[in-house]
Image (cartoon, rainbow, N blue to C red; front, side, top):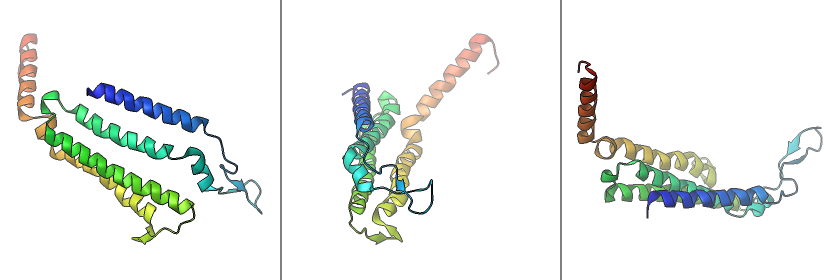
Length: 177
């Protein structure tokens, strides 16, 4: 499948989710409830009720964003450098990010639903996953880019061809090389 059609499809799906969230009914107390003793201050509302109105729309929205990141990384490679190893790497990294997001989402849903979350590394489980997993899974994409830069992005052959093109252009204008 061509990248552009897949990207278009994912963007249309994102638009559909945003439209659904936009039109979702506002639950009572969604913006907080009046504080009992301090005028003008609000206290939190019912987080589970807010999530019920949205269902799992935010979960699927983030999964689409993760897929877009992986596809756009692959799309950024020159066509002759899109090899199986890079695609497998992008897919594995996207799956790792999706696993992290799934742990955060369902851990949070369980916590606001009344379940007592486990404490891991001094934080509730969803917070621990958010603190360590989000940046860690996306950092892996960045490291893949850095480690694979010479192999996939700017290969020595491409750099030499670019240098030759610059030299040719300078020669055509009569500039010194």
